[in-house]
Image 1 (spheres, rainbow, N blue to C red):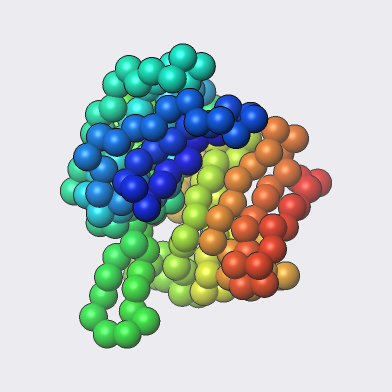
Image 2 (cartoon, helix red, strand yellow; image 1 turned 60 degrees about the vertical axis):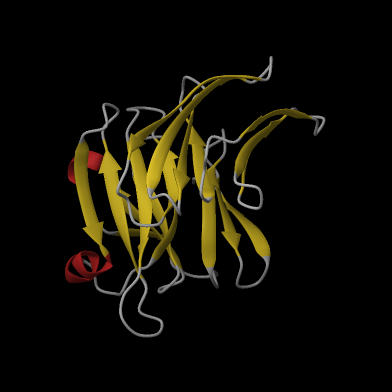
Length: 206
């Protein structure tokens, strides 16, 4: 289990008994989101430094092999996900705008080779889609489609595969209050963290 710890600006790994096996402090500002690649590398965002890192380690031995910045000059990157099918990486940036409650978000998609495939901010998404969208979390489904939470419409939305981004397909449009996290399980069930009513909700793929 790998966790970002913003309190002491580190990334920590634990075994299944809860014992710490590795703590990485590589000058992180505010490590935030992370996901694992199919090669068991860790991709993580640093919201303060505006950077995307790739971390390679032998977690069983508790040894760090490499920690490198693979993309910089991001704006407060938070959520990140890696496609297990294509290796594509999607990052959510939190943009700050003038005035109160004017925050917006931007979705950036990179290929496995870290070429920028596509990006769209809240304003651009609003032109394509029927409602204001503010994304807080992201995941890839089993087929490699980008799935995001939207706190404005209290929904989970599919934005399509990187090559067809963006499409608009609401997957869950009822029963959520303030969805801020999501992930897929091995059986393709979708798990959503809903801070609006302090719950974890699980949806089947059927």
